Length: 433
Ligand SMILES: Cc1cc2nc3c(=O)[nH]c(=O)nc-3n(C[C@H](O)[C@H](O)[C@H](O)COP(=O)(O)OP(=O)(O)OC[C@H]3O[C@@H](n4cnc5c(N)ncnc54)[C@H](O)[C@@H]3O)c2cc1C
Image 1 (cartoon, helix red, strand yellow):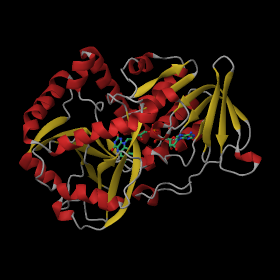
Image 2 (tube, rainbow, N blue to C red):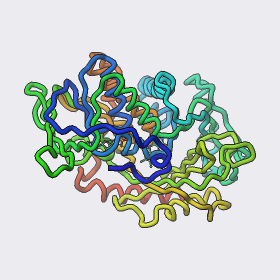
Image 3 (cartoon, rainbow, N blue to C red):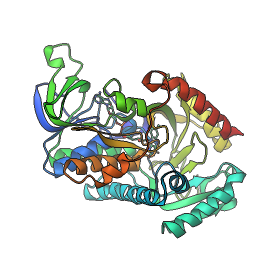
Image 4 (tube, rainbow, N blue to C red):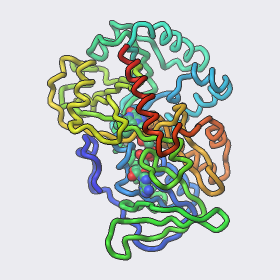
């Protein structure tokens, strides 16, 4: 159960390891999945004095949390205009406030637990079509005026090109409170903090079935891959948190019809001096563009360019991931078309139909949080905390999220992929016209 072969896995602490669950056990709360959501829930529950056990099929941070682009955004996946139009101003404002809390939580976790994850402030949302410029400029004004978010500024095409080393974009919104970090180091940092707070963490322990109710208690059956009878052990718990995000499969129908994995890919070049004075992106910001299938990139702490772009909807990765992403990279940085790529990898981004997170109590004793639709670096640790808070008795934030519309994908779990291919192909085409 090693990590995916990514830059992050190659440069992280490989000694961090937790034992599988090999014997029958009991906990007040069982958590399925050891990414940001599950780890943050474990940390905050343990800090609240709750007896909690977390079960991770592979390594902690093995999923999206250890593979992502590392970009920490302000706001939700949907912008405030969309949220106001679809949910009303009050809910839109509440969601903005909670997203600000989410960003602040990541900063607090880093500071409080001394997590060394190469945090660097500054993120630019760039505009890839001239006709979107007016809209984006208005949005900067709106954030400043209606949301008192003075950390944003508009960069015109020339100023932007000087900052990011390409003139393919027509302008961008720079946000000084957003930024980027090494995602796997963040996940491992939260894991260490959770273990220190008393959470029992188990790697190499796949949950295969959950049965029971809040009245009878839950039985969480696991498989540790061993061939002996010790290969399976059952954890009994009073409550369960489902935190498997895009990797949860065959465990909970309700979640899996509303949340769908899409495979997204990243490459890391050889060190090219990115993020250094005189290099590409000399001020070190992360960049994310306005395409529906987003291009996102940033310099790494060791001067590489990390570039994410391109998705597949078939669940089969491209034979040559580096070549697949390189084609997208060359559209933004033609000068890097032949650059040496040291690492290329993919991971499952979990999306929902409306791109709003799926965070709720599914039924008595069973909670779920997933579907952050590409914005989980901030939202997933926060969702974990929100679930912990709810279990500890404060349901105010959970109720806000639970009220968000999160309909099932057309076709249910079986046929959602086919519907997605049709829908996403249309939007991917629109990116190009
Ligand atoms: C390529 C890529 C780029 C991304 N870029 C960004 C970005 O730049 N900014 C951003 O905000 N977001 C980004 N995201 C999204 C972000 O990474 C996720 O939203 C976030 O990490 C979700 O965290 P999580 O803990 O909910 O899920 P995960 O980190 O996916 O963790 C789920 C875990 O559950 C485990 N699991 C599943 N089923 C079981 C089971 N039955 N038993 C035991 N364990 C189980 C899995 O092994 C996995 O480790 C990106 C995602 C990907 C894939």
